[in-house]
Amino acid sequence: MNIKSIDRIFISLIIAYFPGFFGSVFTTGEITTWYAKLNKPGFSPPNWLFGPVWTTLYTFMGIALFLIWQKGLQNKNVCFAFWFFIIHLFVNFLWSFVFFSSKELFFALLIIILLWSMILTSIILFWKIDKRASLLLVPYLFWVSFATLLNYSVWQLNI
Image (cartoon, rainbow, N blue to C red; front, side, top):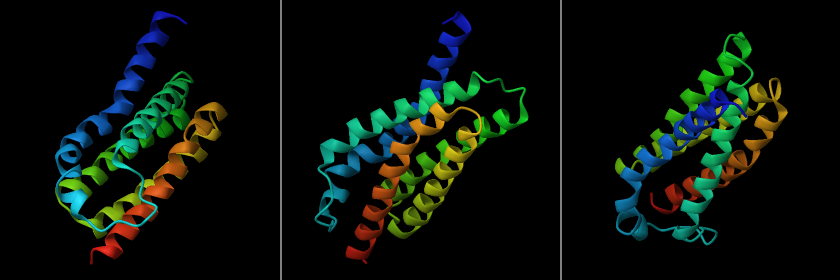
C-alpha cells in the first residue's frame, strides 16, 4: 500500500465516522433521559449495543468508500457513487438529529426510510464498481432495516 492509499483510507474512515461523531452529540444526552422514558418494543436491544454496532458499521462504510475511491474519481460512475455515498452520510446524521434532538419520531421514520433506500442504491452502485465495497454495506442495510422497524415501533407505541 502506497502513501496515497494510506491517506485515502484514513480520509475515508474519517468521512465515514463523521455522521456518527456529530450524531452522538445529539444522541448521548438523550439516551438516559428522553429515550429511556419512551415506550419501546420487546425486541429493542440494550443501549450499550448501539455504540459497538455503529462503530463497526462506520468502519465498514469507510473501507467501502476507500475501495470505491481507489477506482478513480475521474470515472463518472465512480465519481457519482462516491458523492452519492457522501450525501447519504448526511442523511445518516440527519436521522440522529431529528430522532433525538428534535424528538420527531414520525419525521425520523421518513428519514430512515430515505436512508434505507440510499443504502440500497449505494450497494447497487458499488456492486458495479467493486463487489467487495458493495458487500461491506450489506450489514449496514440489515441494521438499518432493523432500526427502521424499531423506529416505527417506538413511534407507534408513543403516539
